[in-house]
Length: 277
Image (cartoon, rainbow, N blue to C red):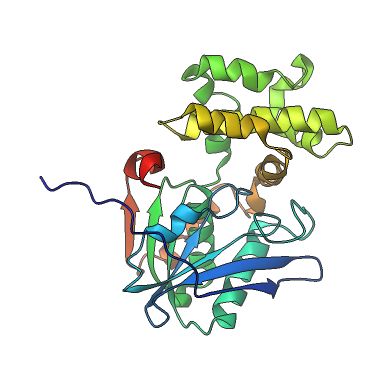
């Protein structure tokens, strides 16, 4: 058996910029060589987390034109954590706006978790603009998936972390934790927002990673504005991602069945350990 291949070396962008998405939002993007290579758009998770440097290292820079962008309200896009004009379908149109801005006819979409959700939403809306789909940790944005992750399911696997997750929410509100967190994260009590943000982020850290280090936990605990990412994520969750039906992405799969696709099985941090990042 051959040795597992690591990530490609660190590279710097050959181009970065900002694109006006609406009267409110401006999105930030970066491109990495090859300028004339096969264009691939890497979609970050969340919703709300922003792109990370490691995502530029999944593709051979000799062959690919690698594109990253921060979705509305995330990363270097502005304004930070803005919820107005911020839905799945706004992001889909931002992607197509970026494609046109960069002069790309068709591109490959690469995403995991929420990135996979957004890849499917875009491909089902603009199937003629997608060369191929590369998806991992597929999340269909169904009510069942959201409840398993944040209400009744993962709590049985991570009971200790679950107790910490419950702590910021009054017992009477725990029947609907996603809504309770959203109210807290969009309230006017900054101390409660910080407490809720840290609890939400730690829960996601524990449940979405297998190799958690003390440094990762410390970084999460010391973040100055920990409520920015979970504010957007809970906003999307309580609105069901603005899908027409709970199973819209699955029901509309016929629109993309002709597009070449690869589904990667495995955990993100196991496939690409932190020490190689």
